Image (tube, rainbow, N blue to C red; front, side):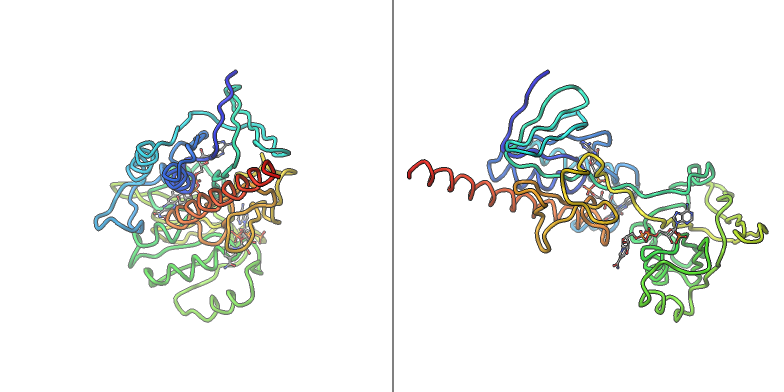
Length: 322
Ligand code: FAD
Ligand code: NAP
């Protein structure tokens, strides 16, 4: 068992954690970044990225993350292959234990453990991911311009994604398993007023149907949740929008989480309920969930952390002088 100590400990190697690392290293905080089971984060699971600013041509998600990792290392971040399994945030330095048995101590902690989309859990869904089935309309909607698409879900995300998709698609169907939406009234009003969106009530996806060459989504087999009747909807894009799981189980009982288990931060900052612990990216953001916003809040976390350490150092020096 080895103990690794640093001024700035970062969990997560997605855009949020790596951006925090780039800023933290350049501020002299010598960050250690524990990468977790998905080094590079969610963008490692996608191909084309067209909306990350700075690239005129389409770039690949894994390439972008490799560039961010190299940039973080070049400026002085120590990237570690480990996953945190236990945390002690009761005193500083914060003390975290990795799957390897190693211990990581940080004067400040930046949590950037992200979130994962919930999926329906169908074999056909798994088979068609990236071939017409997606969990992010903002990311992938553009690839279905002019095509028929469907969104599955009845919450705010599903309704916002359906509305967003009308920018690209002339024919959007929202599929919900009940006969009332969970989404806020104002969003429902916008949805029902939109002529380009059709809502199918009491339906669940039974199968995502592939076809063509190269294979792509061609239809959804639907089952009526009331009558059990089967039907088919021809679509080329299927967007699953049934919620996300923020990766916060480690912090339950240690940090304040909201009702959806996202880490609570003070508005306009990345400060959590424990001084010296900061959260950035999808783990604290259930609204935007984009690489660029994750990177932006990662930058904020590093700046907040630097300010916290400078103030803590000042107080220590002042106390010693008294
Ligand atoms: P994540 O990228 O989720 O990274 C979380 C990190 O935390 C991972 O490295 C993981 O290993 C680590 N971690 C988790 N638990 C632990 C632990 N216990 N210990 C240590 N580390 C841990 N956004 C766009 O802007 N444009 C797009 O085109 C786009 N396409 C997408 C396509 C797909 C298929 C998906 C799934 C998402 C897409 N997104 C896109 C969204 C974007 O990927 C996310 O918003 C972004 O990755 C969030 O970054 P993050 O750093 O907060 O978290
Ligand atoms: P959500 O509110 O939990 O809604 C998930 C929806 O998916 C529900 O309608 C649910 O159906 C449906 N669903 C869940 N599992 C399903 C399954 N296995 N099969 C079919 N349907 C399923 O999730 P969300 O919409 O992602 O929102 C999460 C949180 O973020 C909420 O607090 C929301 O208000 C917030 N948010 C806010 C904004 C905004 O303010 N603009 C935008 C996005 C999200 P049931 O209704 O039948 O349970």
